[in-house]
Length: 120
Image (cartoon, rainbow, N blue to C red; front, top):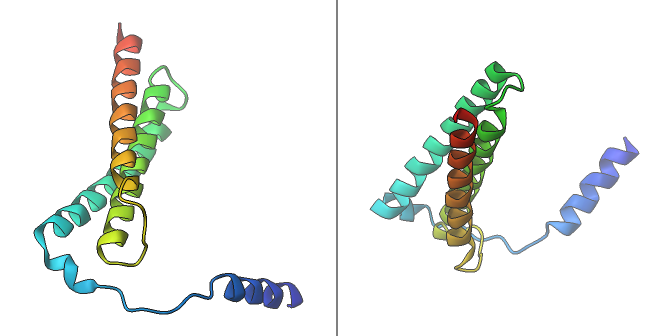
């Protein structure tokens, strides 16, 4: 019990920031709605990729599917960071979300090359 109270106190002290309301009205704008849809699709792809990796069980294509999984995870994180920035929940530099999207593209490209190399 003392450990839980201590961890809770540390969490409260470290997380103490001024409270401000999130800008929820921005969800109705078309770019933010599209980001929300892409985030949902990316999360669905992460779940589907986990299922495919479970079926492969360490086969020849498992490395490329792991790369696809990481690419979808980075895409979801980029979309989430962009959504949090749009709703003014999290204030990140402007280059974080595009950098994550570039990393996503690179991971997808590398996964495609790995799949091509395996299938040859």
